[in-house]
Image (cartoon, rainbow, N blue to C red; front, side, top):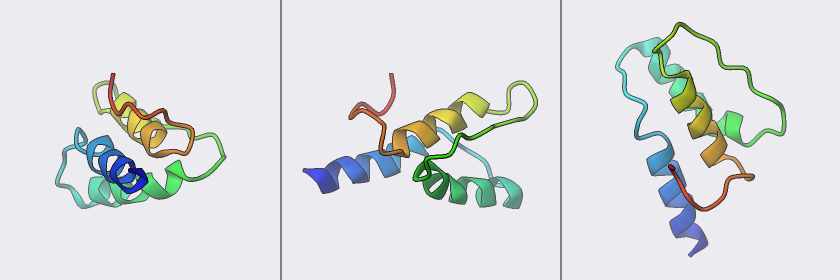
Length: 71
């Protein structure tokens, strides 16, 4: 069951983040690593760039996340 939860978190947490640019893909690649830290994370960017989606992905991949993946 634990492996299933990990798979679902890994797959679904990043599923709503869509992009093709090398900078975006590089940033998304780091999300699981960032999520494992205990440090606060500051996400900045223009309006409409998906900061909230990135924040949710970090949260749901973190050890503090509840089982539910998206509200």
